[in-house]
Image 1: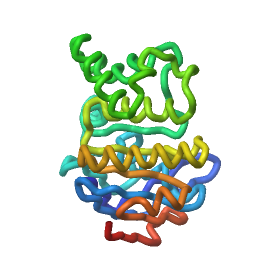
Image 2: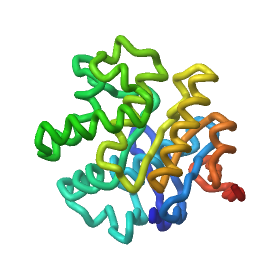
Image 3: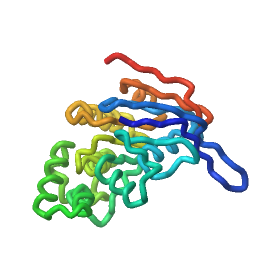
Length: 226
């Protein structure tokens, strides 16, 4: 379960900017949620706080009852490593590594034996239908194929939480639809909690719940029956 308890996030500069203002949310385990709103509404800030990539100015973020604000940097790194898979708009693949190596990298960092890493990476690339692209470099792939590799990498430890920041935003309409269908299929198979930040209404409407942000506040929270 993800819980945000009266979260406020301010950024200091020449002037103070409040990205989130007193946001409280509960996202149950296994839910697929979209977060929408205009640019500057606080969507990515919220995702970064849930993912432990940033800390709130005030309030608490809890993952499965553990308060992230009370964790050291090393403990926070372990939470991200073991519980959260990140999918980014621009893929963030290492250009000198093959698809197989990109997907296996998080497992290498966890100290898995090479044979086990290779087996898991092959399993995941098969799951995202890239059996024939395992040895290719990212530059040899289409945008949709790169995003599939990024999704496989995010799933490498079968995390209970998947956070996706505009996962279809850098893709054409058809490829974006294919990636969304893949995320929905993986959500159904694995039962992970999925939180998607998006500007795409078709992505939003495919989720069982949509949270609307405006000026750093939740202005709407809609659940759909599926």
